[in-house]
Image 1 (tube, rainbow, N blue to C red):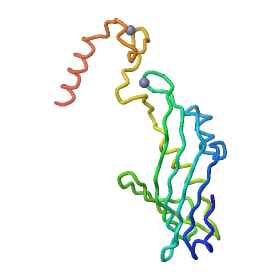
Image 2: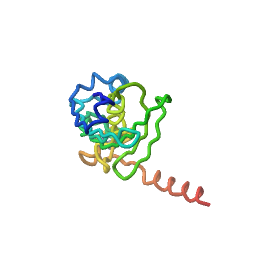
Image 3: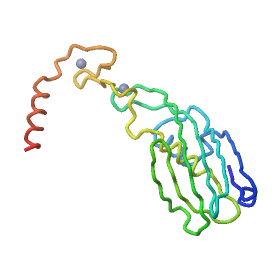
Image 4: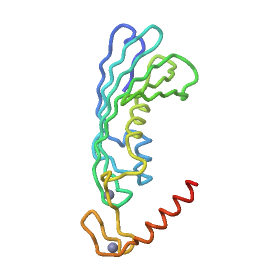
Length: 178
Ligand SMILES: [Zn+2]
Ligand SMILES: [Zn+2]
């Protein structure tokens, strides 16, 4: 997806594009590293307007990923969506970005050179940032029993998993707090 500077100076541009995750090198790298598998194409919508001396690009991206829960090792699917606003100012220091996160929306300032802005790296980054670093199938996932390896979400396995350990943890905590 590209924003042509001459066009956006004249009128608002509404762009939309659906591309497979395999078209974005950073997403391919994530899959290669085993972080997740993208199960839906990357769908992006961007509205670009020219304001004073910069381009304001407001966008929404969507995709989906299959992740492995870091506690119970179950695979689960996660929809990925992100809203963002990027201010592109003409300048040489490409690659340097300032980001401010305001509630759900990210405000990013970036630079461009030449007569068009390639949105692809930013779209890929937005998807990448939505993939959790420590995936959890649910906030309340109980994980696996350290004794027998059973999935505790499916029910108690009957192992004695240490009331003693809990007491030790509590004692350690008291020591640290002093
Ligand atoms: Zn889990
Ligand atoms: Zn067990």
